[in-house]
Image (cartoon, rainbow, N blue to C red; front, side, top):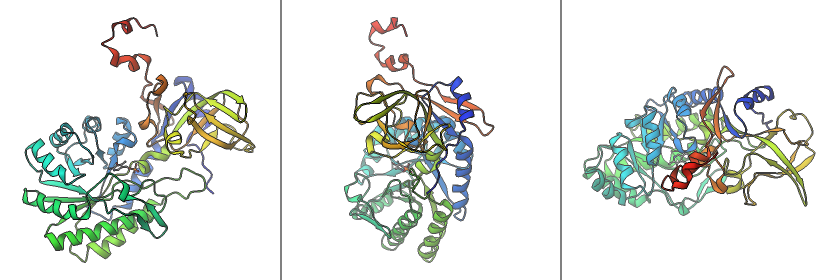
Length: 424
Ligand SMILES: *Cc1c(COP(=O)(O)O)cnc(C)c1O
């Protein structure tokens, strides 16, 4: 069992909350940098390797800028994600546009930025051609093998139920059509399982895709230039889980690369990844304060954050570890539901969680919110988005997104005069 410890001390946090009131998401610059370097090192055996950070996981330009220093591009799937990538100077083939059910306008912008377009469906070939008036020279297709996806540790997920990607037949037909229409450089992409906590997922997926690339070359005479393993490399949310070892994962992919691609004369294939969760997940936390305690049929701790700040527990029943700051070494003898203030009974960060005795005013750190945390925020019950703060390497804190204000929340009512005289 791993002891999960916050990347920030109680003393540091008490200083930060003087300036930035709770709740807020806090990010660990040092951790993000060390991990980005480790990812880069793990795949350095592959000459064309590139990580396209999945912007949806943490769409903050300050964070993306840090990742850019380690050679990361952006994986985008919407207009505003493309705009964000452009704003931090990530353009051209440093953008992977892996969208689905894509609006015409977004293909247009992706093309204007020179992004690599990763098609989700065979019908998108015509749709793209009609929209931008051509088929780009570089193009990628997303593969969905269907059925269930099994690796040595058992069934991982059910791609047959997923809305994404081409069937195998469509994939062969798609590449043939794309070549006919003038495409010159081809990519292959697949995303089969989310949040895998095993070093075997990427190597197993790589083997599937590498063998497919060889088959495509044999049957169609089309050379796949890059293979995109996409996201899905997970993190250890619970103390019982063993975190993935990116070095071992990189070596695992290297091994199948040497076994499958090299003998087929495809040793110059570039490997791409589109990790989101693995890049930032553990390096963010939600800082919140206990504001109420309630004892009825269960014991509740009410905090000043809610599911609008972190949706994963409400949405998936996901576990997020909680540290009560300053009480790390006290026995976990109290069973609490840690709840937010939404009028929704699933607004609980923890259910029946054993924790030290919590007093009103205690600072709580909810771990592993650095990816798909703030990003999934919403405004239900008129709850506002929190701030995002970066804990810099020198220990200082930098505001990297201010909290939403009522004025922001009401901004889209600018057609409604009465709100012009708003008091707060
Ligand atoms: C969500 C997503 C990712 C990132 O997934 P993680 O699990 O955060 O690594 C990558 N690529 C695509 C196409 C996605 O939809």
